[in-house]
Image (cartoon, rainbow, N blue to C red; front, side, top):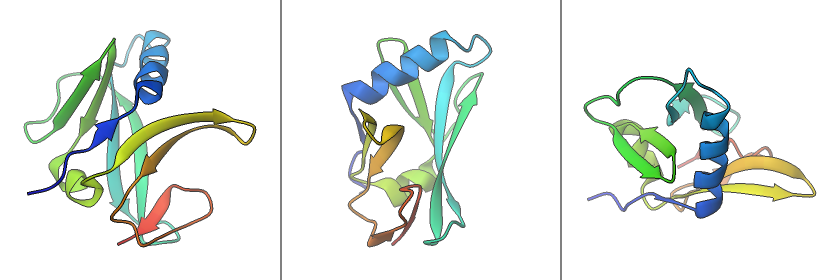
Length: 110
């Protein structure tokens, strides 16, 4: 069994704000793809329509995230967060399965 993925209130708030400004999208799709300097990378896409049959759906306060089952296997136990600090604004995925990551934070290896 794969541990659950969690989403912080900051991430939900930012996604809700993005979706409110993007009328042709109703969700943020997060996926894991092969590639990137450390082996895998996270991909973020604004999408419209219904989730796929195998998607996990996370919803709160007008924010909706789709995560496919293959990506969920790589992200089990992860926390999806949004950080706004002196270094900038970005979604961050705190993934306990990642044994190495690149400096940009979007690529990792298991």
